[in-house]
Amino acid sequence: MELNKICNKCNINLTTTNAVKRENFKYKNICKPCYNKYKSNHNKNIQRIDRLKTFVECENCNEYCINRKGRAFCSLICKFIAYIDTWSNKNGCWLWTSKLDKEGYGHILINYKTKRASRISYELFNGNIPSSLFVCHNCPNGDNPTCVNPAHLWIGNNKDNQLDYYRKIKEI
Image 1 (tube, rainbow, N blue to C red):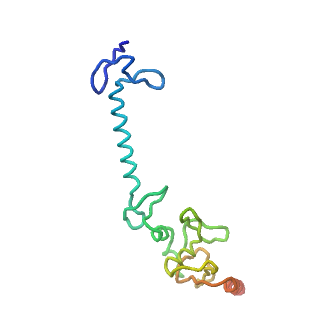
Image 2: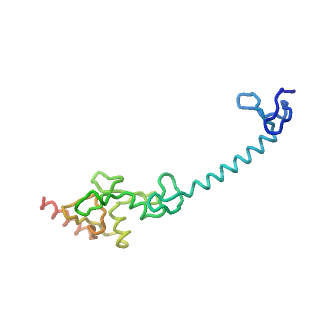
Image 3: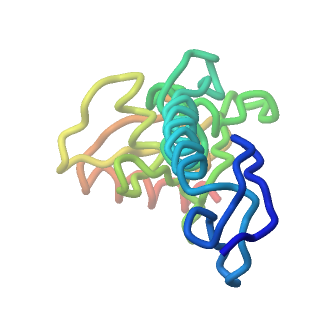
């Protein structure tokens, strides 16, 4: 059956057998071969664009890196530095500006696991920490849980951590 329409791409007369139907059963102004060619090229272009979108500039150092859901950073150090404020505190504390827990300590998501920012700071700048040891704060004006300055951090066992806690309470 003739539709009195012409294909927009190849200018042939459209019939009910060679025209492409829309979802609401009306016919588009394109024939099936042209539509299939358009559809395959369109899918290739979308895949090419998706591949290009995965590589973006790091928000911190402008190096190219892979964008994984949300903000893009090329390394853990770039991600860490993006969340600290080194300018506003006069005591030399690096304040954590991202997520905090109920005690006020910073947290960062690494490989889908939440870790304390002070622990990550110590590991990045001073080396690995045994799992049995704690990262303790030694800020100039008392305990500052949001501080991640590696110069203000030290490691100790559970007893050291508790003694440090009670010493700071007595100072207050």
